[in-house]
Amino acid sequence: MIPQTIPAASPGLPASTAPRVLAFDVGGTWVKYGIVDADGRLLCSGQLATQSEPDGKALLTRLLAVAEPLVARHAPAGIAFSTLGIIDAAEGRLVGAVEAIAGYFGQSPKECFERAFGVPVVVENDGNCVALAEGWTGAAAGVRHYLALTLGTGIGGGIVIDGRLYRGANGAAGEWGYMLVDGRVWEDHASPRGLAAAAEKARPGCGLDAEGVFAARDRGDAQMAAVVTAWFGLLATGLANLLFAFNPSRVVIGGGITARGPAFLQELRAEMRLRLRPDFYRMCDIALASAGNQAGLLGAARLWLTQHGSPATAAANEGTSCKS
Image (cartoon, rainbow, N blue to C red; front, side, top):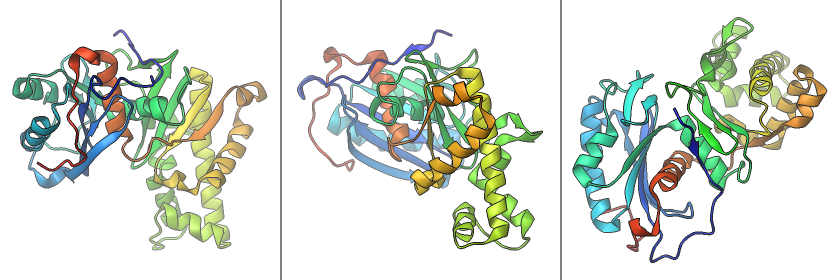
């Protein structure tokens, strides 16, 4: 599969000619949606519960209804989907890793929405969309070789090599959460979920989530301090392996647990230094994601604009509300 070139962000077209994109970000809990302009500005947004519909087919039908007034009001030049799962990009079809949404496997948002609205539609994995957003308006802007990781229920992300999004032979690149680190599935142990599980194992019945584990450590809890240290070690080991494999100039890390900011980075970098050769440690910067919690929408729109955006596909309607 030919990788998609992602050029640096431009200063933007005049308001009268710059295309706008209707973007959706389909997650296991929420579906976010909004209108994104050619400069990466989210002009309006909304969300609905993913599980409000019984299956993937019904969910797409619901999203068609959501899209109809937005298309009528904003006349977007196209529609873009960021979604969980492994994607056949050519067909815009879900072909794997969609267990979180019943009946989602085999669905094609691209086919469904192109038939309904007659505009070009792109569909991409959510981790890849986050990577594109970080390269457009976030912590990897202007960087040509980078990895973007998201620490959530699992550990996912995207790969950009020489300014190009790398999907792999079957669209499954960046699923590094499944790799084994110290004989264990990385995302089961180095995610926030894994940190909470480690705390529960160390102190049965503690009931701490990841944030609570850090808070206990910060209050001087020696047992939780040991849990946090071990967790950072697992996270850093997996990251070190990725650095040896891809040699990026930057790794961008996002997810709620990174809200600790510089303190989080300092601890992670200390563990990385222990696991990397000095030359590799110097080669790569580690940064916190900055594209925000709408990164999936922005990245999906960026992909559409890269593939289809031009003055000829203009959408210039004004308005800041995503209500019909």
